[in-house]
Image (cartoon, rainbow, N blue to C red; front, top):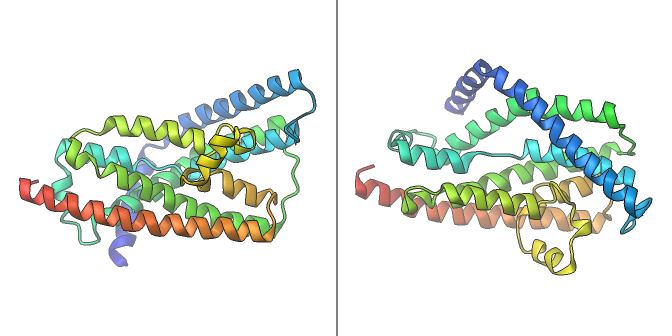
Length: 264
């Protein structure tokens, strides 16, 4: 536990050196929200006050919350694994007493902390002031959201770690990150909420982990689900956590042995 705190402290200091990068990301995050908001305003302006029973204000609230949720659940572990294999630094990381998976998770958390602090939160607050934010959110829903989004962070990390480990066999798995970005943006609801999905894609999303990273935590926060449906969301998130943890552990153990045989 003391070693984890030490790594966390070092990571904080490392990330704080490059605060300007995070400040620049604030502008990009804000413009990304502006793009989504004006896109939906344009669509609603053509079709009327509601689309599929969803009002424009609800869509604007969702756009802002999805940017925030996507930001705090983001992870770069797939790129980190790919870079460490290409550079050979993975041979040194394997010697860490806390294990590579935990080390990468700590690094991902600290990176997201600064990205959220200097990039996501300021851009979201600016968007709320610029466009307005009209939503009744109860304290209990905030607590449920925090619990759900925490599991979303873990799901996204384990998923990326699982497929990022394939770099051991491919030697360069940069293409997986591009595929993952497409799948995440599409099925997580970070850009287009699942409310507007055609039925086949909506059914397919139920069998994928992505919706439990962004869409479902927001749905819990906005109180669009009954108590039974909220319990179902938590059950599915726990299921995906367990499944991805077991799969990531199995694949990594197989891959680690392969690296050791090849001499790092």
